[in-house]
Every structure is written in C-alpha cells, then in structure tokens.
Image 1 (cartoon, rainbow, N blue to C red):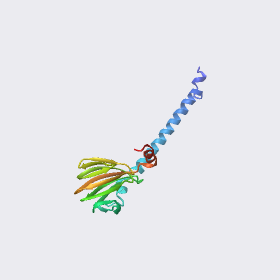
Image 2 (cartoon, rainbow, N blue to C red):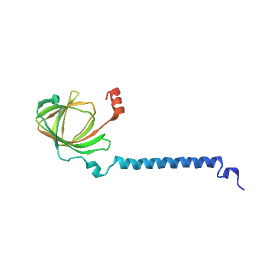
Image 3 (cartoon, one colour):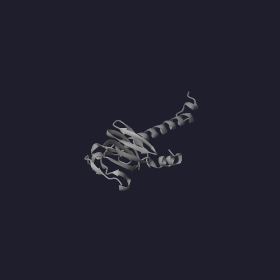
Image 4 (spheres, one colour):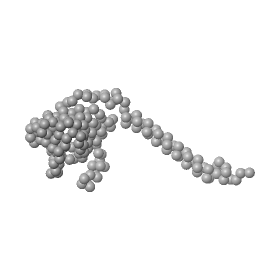
Length: 171
C-alpha cells in the first residue's frame, strides 16, 4: 500500500515537477537566446566584408586640431560589429606634425611601426612599436609625430552608463 505522499499528485512531487519544468523552460530560453546571439553577433564573412574596402583611405582631421605641420593620415577599417559599437582597423600618420585628437569613443591601440610623443593632462609619454595604449571617450591627447607611426585600433562605444559613471567618478 502506498502512502499519500508517494502519489505523483502529492504536494512535494508537484513542487519537484514544477521546479523541473521551470528549470527546463529557462534552459530552453537561454539556449534559444544563445543561438540568436551567435547568428546576429557573429555574422559570416560575406556579411562582415559587405560594403568595406580594405584599401587605405585618406583620413581627415579637423584643421583646428592641427598645431604644427600638415599631418597626412590614412586609415583602413577591416571590422565593424553588426550593431556598429565596435570597429577595428589600421591607422597611419606621417609627419613631422603635431595635432590634437579628440576621442569620441574608447580606443585601444597597438603601435606596429614608428613612434610618437603623446601629451595628456600635462604628462608626456613616448610610444613606439609594441606599445599599447588605451584612450577613454572624451579625452583630448596631443600627438607629436616626428616621422611616421602606424597602429592598429579598436574603437568601442562605452555606453551611457559608463560615460555617466566616468563623469561622476572623474576617472
């Protein structure tokens, strides 16, 4: 003879089956969202390459930012995320020149060739091949390029929350 608690319809068993059902539903939803992310967040190569030219193009600079010389800038963008918040490429400047750069988004760079002198908040730093630098959105940096510098860049939009926190914290 079975007791009432052994019945499949008893309260403890119903709670267990309900919990397992909820867990299965959550796992199914997470798996579905993961599939959507992979499909949208990681497009195939033809989607990434569509509309991009790998050839270097002359980059423009606001004339008010040029402090000395006539910098010649070229840029090649080779990646942009589907949401447009992340992009990457190669940038080159030929001097001698000195100019300000106003960062609208976060940027991480790795210097491939050449070098430059950077001045930010009164501090000057020399960078050259192999150096990596991170610039925050909103910063203004003075670049002094004696001959030439070539770097890879990754731009990333920090978002409203990060921008607000930075303005409150001050860093």
